[in-house]
Image (cartoon, rainbow, N blue to C red; front, top):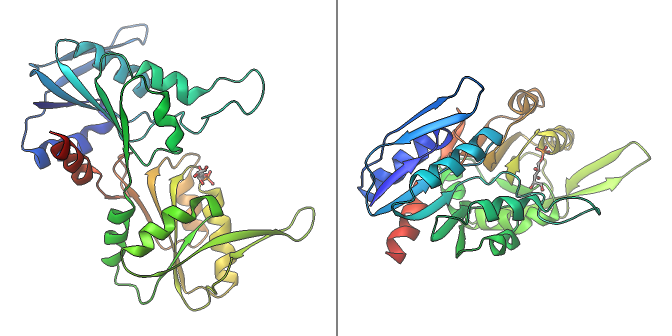
Length: 283
Ligand code: R5P
């Protein structure tokens, strides 16, 4: 068994190969003069673990080509971050179900799929092969322990993310709550913890994705107004588009913590151990 990966998942794929004590196949990537992508894979084994996050359109195409290049092997596909998963239903007539379209593309040439904190579990049913999801909430909890914060408060940015926040909080037996939005006027909205008080506390807002950082930046500003000592932002998938990192720092966020499902300077948590465990468990 060997590991192979797209360019955007090199670090996670290498960590996974190390955890499984198996080799990584080298791939040469290039482009044709018209911009079309090309790749050539090294020597494959009978079984291959293909690792590729869909972080943009180029990585979607590259992963599609890589799966095709591995057609002589029996393939397990790991999609650490699956872009397009947020459009998981048809919200308006005429729209695509993008998550379904992408899942269908990645069901060809693979026998099984593993995702990490997929935005909605229902997306797994769009794959034409068995698909499983792992959650990095325990790993996030373990990372938060290393910060040695006194009595931190784990907050979800909304009720939908509360279950994830509770799993993170369980790792350290910490308090957990979610932010409730109250509309004060046509233009003014207040965000505050539903039940607990943030005053004089270290608050960690946790979510599956930080995209523009808008939600957490607004929440951080309000939490400071409510007397929070410090606010951290943690997510599994650091999409960090439109200058999100700077936006969060400008809002006073003490640190941004994310995982290597999208490889960033602030990737402090690795999905490798859990992916390796699930692969070892199922053989
Ligand atoms: C939404 O469904 C996700 O879970 C995140 O809450 C969202 O993507 C965050 O977006 P932003 O960082 O742009 O506020």
